Image (cartoon, rainbow over all chains, first blue to last red; front, side, top):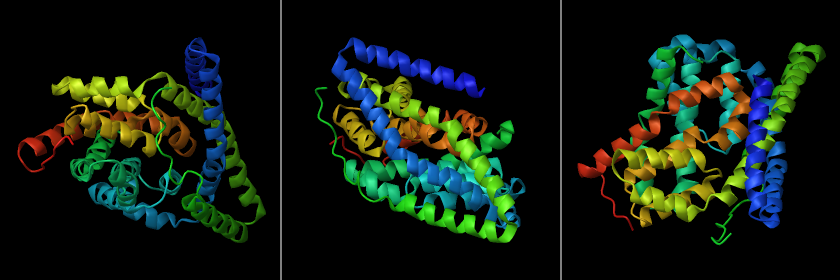
Length: 164
Length: 185
């Protein structure tokens, strides 16, 4: 599984690099450099988050996490997780580190899915910092409003399919 | 590359969220060391570092795919496609491009803005942003996979597939019923 995913990904990289190279050396070198720089820039952030989330999960009070958003917490747990997602500030490191720490310390998968879906769709700080300056505000609020039920639908599907 | 690069605000700025997580992680690590001892501390550190290391080739691949797709796929063409398709097909096309286009918020929101100018309706724009947010592969590969592992991420994305269309349909209903008023300017 691990190896197959890696091979597939690098085949895609090779195909895209080939197309870029056909269109010119500059494009190819530019793409490779941009991608590599982005990787280097992200490395410390992902490292801090991934290595940190293991320790954070270890000190989180498991009984408390499980009773609020555990697999048995049902719809109420999904509501709590959705609210938590909407209120989580910060970039991707924060949301994913909290989500995976919660999962490791006893949160239910549908609840974590609700959390990360809500956080991705309408974390309040992101709407204000990113979306409102770059988009017509009416579109932003419309998008946020119609997104309100989506974490519940995602969590419901997760419960229905019993996966992950 | 004919289109101008979008502005990149705050790109080099000090990253508060990473710093916060680093401080919290450090405190948690110290607490584990004091509470459970050196051996348990090294156990956790070892498994997390292994996880991190295993993910690095995928993260690098994700970054490279994102960079090449940005250069190969002209934004103008994407905007024209989404702007001209309407009906249910329009929602699906918009969602598909949301899946396809890599990049962070600074590159994606100007593209969504361009859709509006080129005549796409609010439903298509909502479907595009929702799909980019929930099903975008660069985000999943670079960020989500290292934290959650492939099993969780794949299922989360499968369960997210209907969501962009639902959001797009809801947005259209809201606009048509007069609950939300939008002009394409």
